[in-house]
Amino acid sequence: MKFKCQQNLLSNAINMVSKAVSSKTTLPILSGIYFEAMNDSIKVIGNDLNLSIETSLPAEIIESGSIVIPARLFSELIRKLPNDLITFDINDNCVVDITCGDSNFKIVGLPGNEYPELPVIDENNSFLIDRELFANMIRQTSFAISQDESRPILTGALLEIENGKFNMVAIDGFRMAIKKAIVKTELSRKAVVPGRTLNEINKLLSSAEGKGDLRISFDDKQVLFSTPELKVYSRLLAGEFINYNQILPNEYKSLVITDTDQFLTAIDRSFLMARENKNVAIKLEIKDDIIKISSNSEMGSSMEKVHIKLEGHDLEIGFNPKYLMDALKIIDSEAIKLEFVNNVSPCIVRPQDNDNYTYLVLPCRISK
Image (cartoon, rainbow, N blue to C red; front, side, top):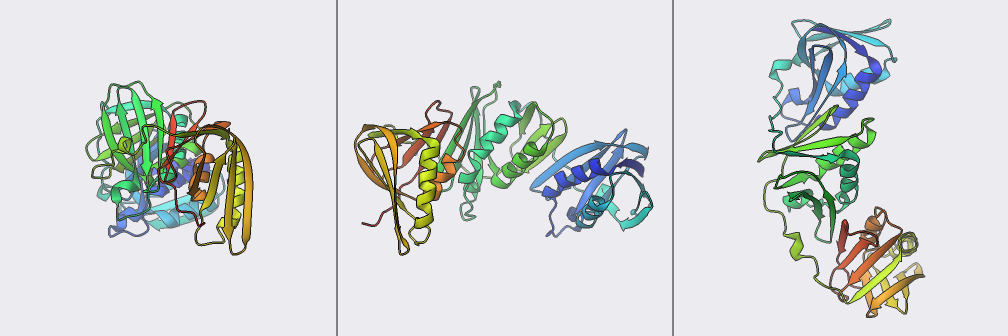
């Protein structure tokens, strides 16, 4: 096996697939990166059996073949080389001879034919979505994915497709985020994708130079996210996701409309005081077109006032300020709607100008 490629292109490819390389594995070959030279490109894969990332880069192929090279050592070496042409010559004993300018290195690899094969997923069970839209869906829901491994199904987000409607839902037991989109597909599917997978895809899509659509393909146990330059395979989480529609209130008794940034900055300042106390709750007093936001701790107290438009009853309710701030930071709307039933029922937060995003947050007790 022998090929030549540019340092910067190789370094970028290694950075992409390294997210799926495990440093702690019972299979030593999975701590390496798979390279396959064929035609006029190099296929590059990282795989930890739960998450796999594949990309490719153009190269001059002198002799085709495959090899697995230790990821940590190889990535550090390539990163430190100048942006120049690199020549790779791999012998039958899997010794990788690397030449770049006046530098030469030898690394012992493993046979490529021992590397686990990636799953084959039927792209007929798939749909297309704009990659920027999908990245935004992740951004607006992933923070509500549970970190509690005792409830594994909630450590992922539900992807739900039916009648051209695509929903992404995340729940952690204290709040729930729902982002909706319209896609052109007749596919009907529900699948729970691990939070780790979605976060890695978001990073990859954000750093990628390409535009256009992302294809999402399913089988019973796997999902594939693919673009012309990238493929991400992931195992799905097993189990039944919560029926989230049953959690959403059917009506509200109080509706508040207010400026998103003003409400966020007021809560942020109140959080400075609230976090000094083990009880991090802030109190919202809603009355006469004003929200009073107050917090108390042994260090002192705070009071903020934000102008609102109120429809319905006055209300006094407490929240964990972080849970409110997490949603307010990602809502792309100048104004928000807050829907309340009473001071012990969940609050619904939505953008004022559309219903494509819904955030539910549970209230908490406030000290008198």
